[in-house]
Length: 99
Image (cartoon, rainbow, N blue to C red; front, side, top):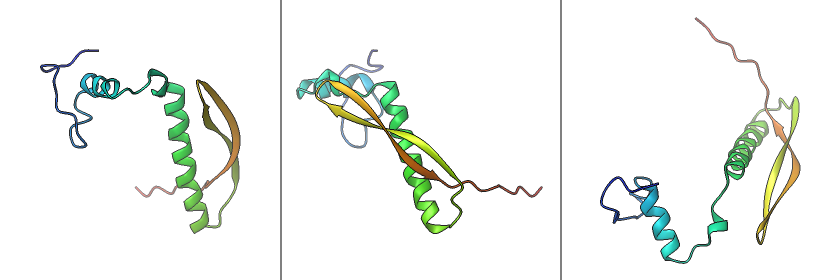
């Protein structure tokens, strides 16, 4: 990975997504540990957890609870990654498309 610009991009809340190289460099400059970087698996699990949370909110609004899925929860303990399953409820409704 390299900087597409000069290697000295200004990283702040508005520009942090523009240059991954300079953002990572800034993180390491402030003593962030390498093992704090999320793996692809952790990123996917986090997205699934977010989806499950949104579905749970929808379930509270509607009373249609038809399907249960197990969504693993990521728990970090020092340098090890532990994955525990939890049960989340998903809203399953047919979608009507009018053409």
